[in-house]
Structure formats: C-alpha cells, structure tokens
Image 1: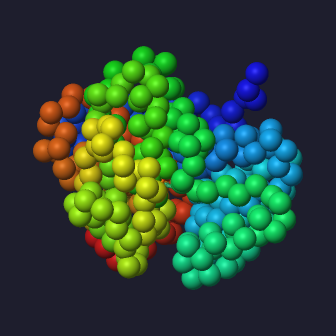
Image 2 (image 1 turned 30 degrees about the horizontal axis):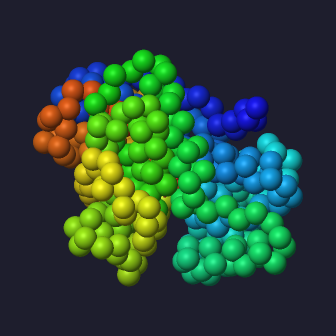
Length: 310
Ligand SMILES: *Cc1c(COP(=O)(O)O)cnc(C)c1O
C-alpha cells in the first residue's frame, strides 16, 4: 500500500461573477495553504517519499525557494536529512525559512543552474537522492493530485489557468487531466514578461533559453522549460499567455483584500489572467485557477512592489 501523501487536500471555492473582468465565476484551488506554502509539496513530497521507499537516507535539492521548502518539509516528515542548494539571488528570509524547516542551506552560484549542478554533484558524491524542482515524472504525478481533488469534489470546470516556471506544475496538471479522462480540457499557461521561457519557446517552435530573468516573479524564473513540457502542446490543448509584473502584483493585492491570503507574484500571474485577458476566457464558462501560492511574499514586499510598479 502506498504511504499516505505529505500534502493536504486543499480548499476549492468559487468567486462571484463580479470578481474579475472575465465576468465569470472562477474556481480557485487554494494551494497557497499547503504546509510548505505552495503546491510544490504535492510533487516534491511524492518524489521524496519514493526515494526514501527505495533506500535514500539523505536528499539534495536545488531551489530558489518553494521547491526547497517543500523538500525540507518532506525530509522532516520522513525523518531524513535534507540539503537545499540555493543561488546567491535567494533572499535571506527565504534561506531562513528553509533552515527553520530543518534543512541545511548551502549557497552556491549566481543562478539556479549553478546551484542545481552543485546539488547534483554533492548528491552523487554522497550517494544521496537528488530531487529536481520541476523535471521528473513522479513530480508531475504528484502535482496532478490537485486535479484529482477538484474532480472528486465534483466541480465542473472547462479550462485550467496555471503559471509556468520550469513547467512541472503544467506537466502535473496535464497528467492529472489525462488520468481523469479530461484530455480535452485546455490549459492556459501563464508567465510574466521577463520570465516567459515557455511562451518564447512556443512562439519560436524550439526550446529557448532566456539570457536572463528580469521579472520579480522569481518562482517562474527558469531560463528554460523541461523538454517534456515543451513537447506537451503536441498531446494536450495548451495556450500560452503573458502578463506584466505590475498586473501580477495587482492581482496579488486584489486577492489579498478579497480573501485575506498572501501569494507571490508568480501566483498573481495566474490570477491576473481573468482581468487582463478576459477575451481569452470568453469561450469558457467556469475556469479553474490554480492558486499556487509561494513563501516569497510578505506585506512589506507587496507594499514595496506596489510602490515601485503601480
Ligand atoms: C514553482 C512555482 C511555480 C512554477 O512551477 P513550475 O513547476 O516550475 O512550472 C509557480 N508558482 C509558484 C508559487 C511556485 O513555487
């Protein structure tokens, strides 16, 4: 029998029609209330459990934040040591949150790719398990549980809106739709300008590596999406769309005022679509938005972004 999952079955609720410019009620899947602060625990927890079942005694992960805290949480729940390698760009608060969850935090490299290479190297040296933040089939299987929950709750939805970094969440949603017989339900994949590696790749018809990430939505800051994610539009209806950092921050503020919950701009990006691209939602009746959450936010940060961008 598989071990019980580490993530929570999160609330799902419906906004009023007047909540957004789309003029539609929106289903909101509230993964911001996962114990790790984001949906990441679904897949990272699944992968860490698998590694431990297969004998791992130690876990290494590279992350700029939310995957790291999810791995730290999973390691604590599973009773094994976890080391998270973060790049220098990861804020002191996020490093402290990861450490407070019980993991060892190592700072290496100026960008994620350097931190990631270091985590892979250390895991190999120590014969420990290495957990990728977005590129592994078990992560996608785990992330797909969010769709299982929405379906078993009986909610009718006719499209899914979710943000994209490296694309693990998108791959998980597609996997979840597929296993629930919903392969016809389109996914709207959202990125902020300055972090739009998936959108750029779809437009170019080849997997693009962005020269740099210039968006404040750092959780979407994968310079390149996973190959599997680039290939997904061949098997599932997916549309890509971008919003600005300012639009993402506005959506965070509106959501905070309406529901009294803080989310990162990475999550605000998905929430923003219903206001910024109502045309895109015109052919749908009941969109589902994955409220992916994130720990890289505070009242102070939101206030600073508001002053700078709005
Ligand atoms: C990781 C993350 C994303 C993007 O997920 P990917 O699997 O990298 O596409 C979006 N929002 C938040 C809050 C995240 O932590």
